[in-house]
Length: 268
Length: 298
Image (cartoon, rainbow over all chains, first blue to last red; front, side, top):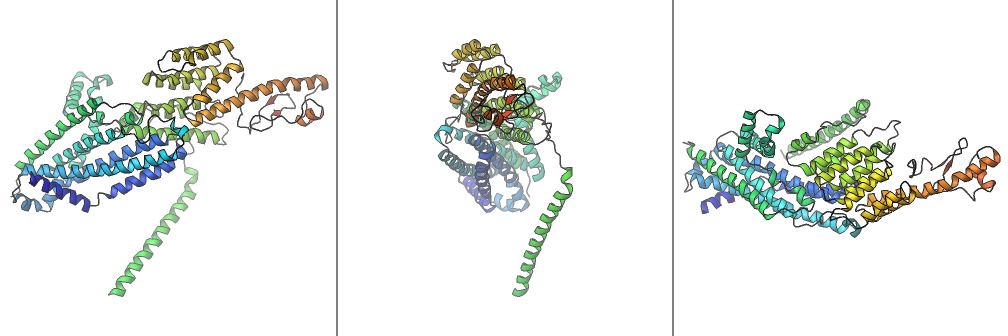
C-alpha cells in the first residue's frame, strides 16, 4: 500500500511542478469578472448565473486537467524511459497504475476543493451586496450547502475521466488517448439518446446496438445536478449513492483493465 | 558578453512592443475597412432547442444562461434601435431554447411572456407566443401558479378576453400552492369585463407580489398607463366641447388654457405633457413618454 501512496505523492508533486494550480487563479478571475459583468446584463439573474458558471467552469477545467494530465501518466514514464528504473524497484505494475490514478484524483479533488472555496467566497460577496427585498426573489440562498452535492458529483465524473485517460494511455499514443477519452465523455452525455434510438426512427437492429452501447458506456447525465441545486430542488441521497456507485464500478473496471493491459506490456 | 546580452534583451522588448502596436493598428484598419460588411441582422445558427440541448454536453444550465442573456440583449437592442421596421423574430426561438436547456428557468418564462406580448414597436406583439411559452412552463412545473396568473394577464390585457383570463386564474387557484386571492381575482375579472378597475386590480396584485424588481416596475408602468388613460377619458370630452363651441379643434393646450377649458398643460403620470392633435382633436400620451403607446381599448 505504501508503494501506491509513494507513486500517488509523486504524481501530486509533479502536477504542482507543472503549474496545474494556475487554473485556480483563472477560475477565480472568471468568477469575479463574471459576477460584476453579469449583474448588468441578466435582468436580476446574476446569482443563478454565477452558480451555473462556477459549476460549469469547475467541471470543464477538471475534465481538461484529467484528460491532459491523465493521458501522460504512463506515456511520460515510457517516453522518458524512467519506467525501467521504476519497475526495477519493489513495486508491482498494479500498484504503479493505482498510485498514478490516486495521485491525479488527489490533485483534482484538491483543485475542486479550492475552487469550491473561491466559489462560495464570490457567492457570499453577492449575498452581502444584495438587499433583502431582492433576495426574496431567489429560488435558493446564495450560500447554499446543497451546491456541495454538485461539486461532489463533479468529483465523481472527474474520477471516471481520469480512469478513462489512464486506461487508454496504457496501450495507445497520447493523442489517441485524449481523443478516445473525450469521445467516451461525449458519448456519456448522449447515453439517454442511445437508449431511445427507436424513437428517432432507427431500425430495430440499430436500436438494439444503441441499447447495448448505452449499457456498455457510463451514463454521465445523472452526475449533472447543477440545474436542480441551483433551482433549490432536492437531490436525494439515493440519487447521489446510485449515480456515484454506478460510476465507481466503471472506474474499478477501467483500473482492472488498465492493470491487465499494463502487466502484459513488455518494457525490456 | 553582459552588455551584448542586455542589448539583445532590449531589442526583444522593442520588437515585442512594435509588433504588438502593429497588430493592434492593423486590426483597427481592418475594422474600418470591413465595417460595412459586418452583419446587421442577428443570426441564430442553431434553431432546434433539442439539437442545442445535445450539443452542450451537459452544460445545459450555463448554456441556458447564455441564451437568456442573448434574449434580453436582443430584445433591448431591437427596442432601442432606430430602425423603421423592428424585427423581433428571434425572441421566441431564443426563449424557447433557453427554457429547453433549463426547463426550470422561472424568470425566462415569466419575463419572456411579458416581452413577447409587449405591443409593437416596444415588443413583437405576440401574446399567443407568450401563452405558448407559459404553457411550456406549466408542463415542466405544473404547480407554478405564477404561470397561470401570467397567462391570465396576457389573455386579459393583450387579447381582451376576460373569460379566458378568468379561466386561467381559476385553474391556477386550484393548485395547493396558489395564494387565496387568485380565485376572487377570477371572479373580479369576469364581473368587471374590460373595465379599468379589473385591470387595476390585476396590475396592483402583480406590483405587490412579483419576485423580481423589473416585474414590479412593469406593473407600476401599467398602472400609470391606466391612470393616463383615465385622464385621457376625461380630457377628450373637454376637447370635444371646445369643438362644439368653436367648430374647430384647438391648436394646442395653450389655446385650451386661454379659453378656460383647462387650468394648464395636462401632464401624464411621468410628467410629460399629453399631446393634442389639432386636426382630429385626439388626446394621447406623447411619443417620448415612457407610457407610449397606450393599449388600445384600455
